[in-house]
Length: 273
Image 1: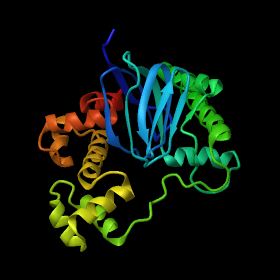
Image 2 (image 1 turned 45 degrees about the vertical axis):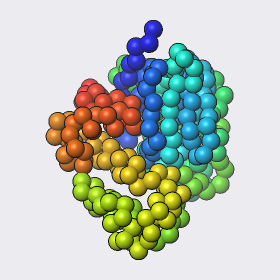
Image 3 (image 1 turned 90 degrees about the horizontal axis):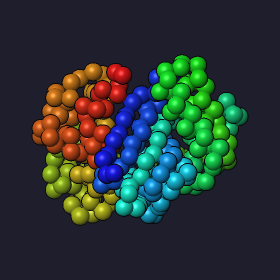
């Protein structure tokens, strides 16, 4: 069986948490980053992914915990692919749970990416199961219990650094700000470099060293984030492409699926289900 399936949805009761259940064989995530944490339980097969300069593998029963804003990829690590369930909790959701546990101030950071933790795996399954049933009390309770367990077992002690703005040369920060401002009409690399007072290759190299992506890939990731925001507001997928800077809907769909795992229409359906 090689059919791929993916279901992306909001958590039914806790704002700021998304959920994905999927089986992938040939799908490959392009290099991208999330503003949220990524907590994935591998239910079968193996996922292989580049993360923070390393190539990692997560196998059946293991839990992958990715910190926010870290560039990563994702693809099958075995011919039969992988099946997994993922939580994408916003930074403030995880920070609030950590504060209730008495953790020091700061944003929680997870130093180990792939962990063997059967108890956490059971809790992650229960989060998805209770959310699917639509039980408000159970789904919110199991989510916070799962996050508390993962924080208690795997978060670094002391003030965290996840999601902290990376140190960057002034020219690189200015280039990034310009990409945010000109999402739908970006400059060429040469124009970008001239505007911030840098050489083209020097800017390309420094930008990637700072943010994990070259400017064009960073812009694509930014555009997909903008597309998600528009879809969250109820904008129809057919109207999103132009507002997010994509040339047409096919262009949006191709990059959206490579980063989010589902096409824009399926993502939008999951926001209203």
